[in-house]
Length: 83
Image (tube, rainbow, N blue to C red; front, side, top):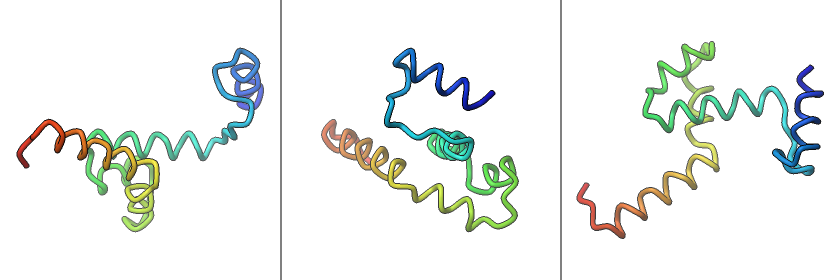
């Protein structure tokens, strides 16, 4: 069912043909999204069932999240936002 849905979205051009989508990538995206929304590491970790906060910290330090946050910081600096 999952693979069929992904193949359907690829066929419709919604997902690029070379993009690899797995259940874990969806989980990863959800964890990063919750962290980006400001939920604490401990809360997100509990939500996804991590037994050790170090596991959740891996998501907090993901490259995609880091790049997004660095862009947001640069935008704030460009606007002259005070920290």
